[in-house]
Length: 207
Image (cartoon, rainbow, N blue to C red):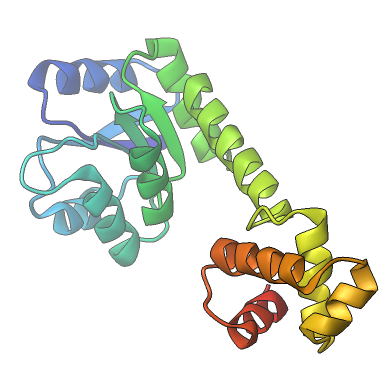
């Protein structure tokens, strides 16, 4: 039996969810709260396996509620149930400890399946949310390939700075004028957000 708690300030929706879980095989609604006041003591009594939690709650936000619940009852799995689709809310909730993220426009069948999936060790997300998460990781990975968008020549010059070459030696190595070397190094400083050769080398070695 999957024991479920609901934290939702909309009375009609809260009762609808209670009805849904009460009449879903293998599920039991053990708590239904309109806010997060005394949530830890409430959950210590009812001992839910899974909590469906809204983000836009009165007084204490659902994201803060996730942190509070996970700090005190880490075995409870939390499924965010919200209208918010913006990236900031998604990642705040996940970083706080939520294990799934479901939009309120989900069908009753999707809600029940998400709860089952979470109980079995999954990480259910509405498809639009999953896409945002994937795109964010892809963007992060792409950005890491060349964090500072240095050109090939700028990267070569930076590596030569690490090797200790002087401006004159750089000019000789790459068959360019010292003025051009200075221009490249100026661009490197700008992209790395540094003001000196020592800072540039230190940052490059760190990365």
